[in-house]
Image (cartoon, rainbow over the protein chains, first blue to last red):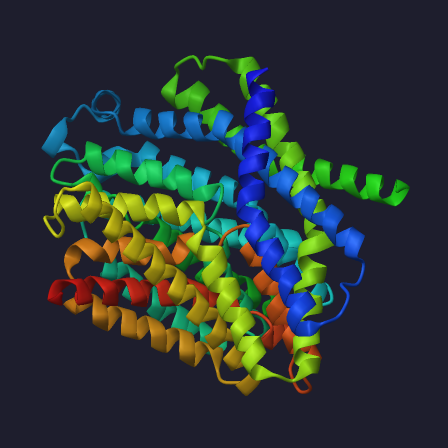
Length: 254
Length: 247
């Protein structure tokens, strides 16, 4: 019963977020374009599906993945667990004592990105526009690999306390080099994929991981060092999607 | 009707496949690493079903509504030939969808806590609310500007790599003079702005615009709007942090 009530609540909440966008789009169509909307009822039905879908998706995540993921992030960064794994405590902990954290970060970054609805939307569009040259599944796996690597590296940065901007600057150097050699058609899509990866599913989980880590490592403040994982998760997909384009050329697909 | 049902059930099957990796990751870590029992197994299964159904509904609705309306508006605006309305549309879409974004709300509140901890603002409710609201306005403004820049690029055919890389070079430079407590938040704010409903609309806008302009290719020119929307929030938030020091 609770689940039904919560679902209803989440769908209404989503409707509240979607309504201004719908009103704006319809108003623009009516007053600026001054044309009737083609397939008006199809669009209305579509928006109903988008709203209900997003609401159910969020309530499901809130009931399952988010609490479980947060709990797991806490358990893996718990001092007792780290002691059990490495035999070291507190300041004596070395960066590689956190190996389960890196593995979890990579796995959860990869798998949640595959379930990211915004990324699906972009992949479907890219596949359509490129007449099949960019595969829906291939692009998503490429992005997910980038996010997985980025989140794991971001955890390493929190643990070692190295400055965020060094990594970001180095990452963009790689992006610059790749941009000059990658096929032209993949470049805008690669740049976009950095932004779409991090939304509904991925952000809450990796934020929990970052805060948990910053609390567990001595000398780190959750407030100052807990941030930055999202930035890593947005940078590395650019690199992996550019690489995906380069591989496609090698395989003679583009 | 029958076709729609077939499409919907296909979307549901795909959603099942898309979510399977998460289930595997969690199960493996729970069983082999953490080794602690999970309570409420049944409610996890129900929750999982909701996630699958929700994802399928969303993707189904995306094809029916978000893509067609976004592209249709882009085509209509291109036919109208008014750059001013095109920029207005891009700005309002960016600003309007970002100011109400729940993820941004959460980040802004967290950032206000950081600012209190760093002693940048006082620990009163009014200070915290002002700071969080200021941050949200700055980020929303930056996304509006980003979409305008993206549209301008499609119209003028300027080089996307030059603009984006140039932007990030600027970010690195400004980082060196920005107060340290704002840097992490600024870098993260680029990622949270683009929500699940905005991304398909913005993608459709870019692709629709590029396909209705002569001499533009939707693949090489239509994408890139979201790249701007991830870049400008970083710049604007860093500048916000610097500006606050002077006020």
